[in-house]
Length: 171
Image 1 (cartoon, rainbow, N blue to C red):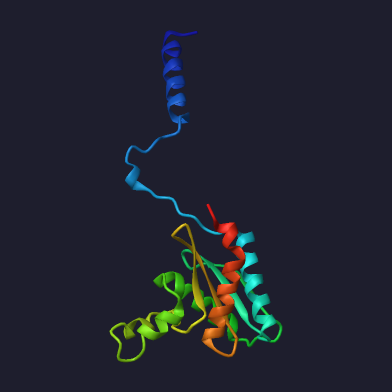
Image 2: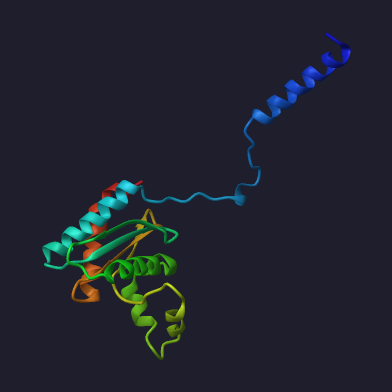
């Protein structure tokens, strides 16, 4: 083996070992972790919500979004109106975006209220039926319901769906 090769080989080995050791961030404030619902939990939430509305005689669409407002599950009952899917998604998105249920947002954003301008934000819908999903005080997603005879009933179905997964969210 040549003298140069003998010198380079240990340096290459040291470099390879150095790159294979995981880097540990010294500044723990540089990143953070979040919790999101699994697909299975989101499906359970959507189905429980749909089932509750069905039991009340309502044909609805339900959307479950992650904490960032991205759709995870969307279900539409057979006779729910064509508009209900988009409406449910927008309600769920609005709830997580503002971290408040849409029944409350509808009230504080009425014409003449100081927050009325938020109704102009693209994609939001200030109409009851969007509810946040929380676990251990942290936002983990949202659920939106559309198609019951009133926003209050949409909201109530969403609450029943959330109750169905409460034990699953305990950590």
